Length: 225
Image (cartoon, rainbow, N blue to C red):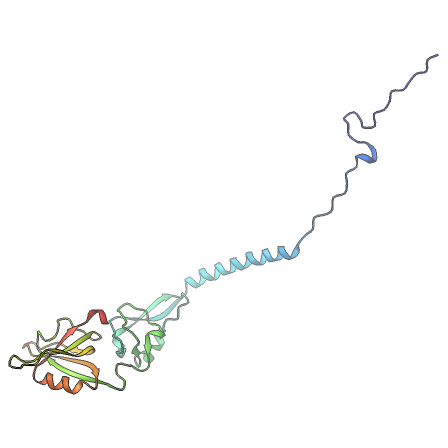
């Protein structure tokens, strides 16, 4: 008698996959969350947005500042007529406010200030070295030809001794870089123009003596402003 045989059951299943307990997946550990990094990212985003907003808002703010309308030479007092009020964007630069203009006119230019310059505190000083001890203001009455045309306040000039034709003396420089304090144009009759310069007090007596006899001329030094 034949004994019927049952077909063997493949433990791996028809597709070869594990069945039963062996087919269960291994547990996966949960992802570690980093709340500190997430919070930092949020703060950075908010901070950037706030900074951008402040820049946009600040760019629209206007402040009242002082603009210089004419050249002011080194050591020259700052005149009220050389100042004007302008409205500019607040860029963070500490320009002198228009409300301080009465203080400004009591100061002097620390260096040559050109027209169109927005004034800052570093451009002014309370005492002028050009007008300090050891200096003297000298007035010169010069004829056309003894000084260059277009000479203006704040320019630098050489003061030159020019002896008369009958003199045997040689021309020489008496002041290498004198500051022009003021200039008055000659009158309609062609009279002499009045120029006031600032020189060392040690040479001022001789300059005045030579000027009285018409033996002084001045030459402009454009590069020495």
